[in-house]
Image 1 (spheres, rainbow, N blue to C red):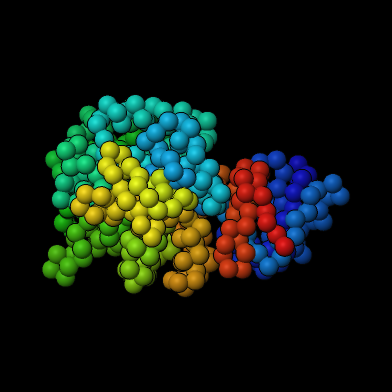
Image 2: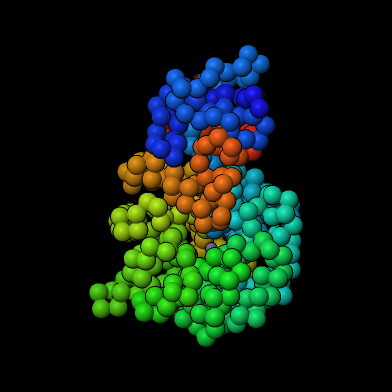
Length: 388
Ligand SMILES: [Zn+2]
């Protein structure tokens, strides 16, 4: 198909590296060409040509862990969920997995039914159940009264309610039923994520051997790394089979902890997530996270009762900018953490995660300071390009 849109002049991040004077062609919902301008055929006369000189073109971001944004959450109505999705899309997140928080099991099953419809329509990329199968010792912003041990029958109940749209379950694998639940998830093709856990190093190794492949917001809601008790962090960082989620908002992680994880796991095993709640893309104020009240001040969300950090107000464009300008990570590594790796984890690498012919035209246009100036999803601008 002849391209209907050609983006020229940008620094394009391709799987092979950065091309300075790059060109990306789009026809319908797909990318038809991506590469150096010199190697590309001339744009057809009837194609729209967008001169993106001085800008970056990167693959749309993929968020594995997100509870809401734009004043709405994935615990509300379908309209609320779509508000959250649209808020994050305007910040470059073209693929998003909706996360639930601990709640009553029947309520979670009903919520999963609603979210599965949105997944079937392609609005979200599936569901991540964070809780209720987590440790009371590391509950973070989850209601203690509603926590339960990971009974495989109850895990299966949630998977059934999600009608094939469950993508990930975060659980404390050291609890009774934990390892059996991990095996069940692995069998069902659902990611078993170790998180909100009080597991030892040895127990975490067992969980990985049973099939766990993701660390839910590494460092947060788990025992710290100690030299005589290396804990889950060490086990998760050292195993090639595991991808570690990091919340790069400057609050959840010290920059040195991020460097430690990045250097140890390598750029192919890190996924930046938002863990965003309703306040993302809005501002300070009072919000709800599941059944719990949260106060957001200076962009930091904390439980009103007890003061635990309660999700973030992060959007992935900010995580990108911070990773390049504060953490000084190479742009190609940041693209891996924001697009390539999460797409691979979701089994969607054939469609999204990189700028290659045949893939969905999901891309973010960033200026030289890494601020989002345009977002395209499946060939349509969801944020029209703002170019000088
Ligand atoms: Zn979360």
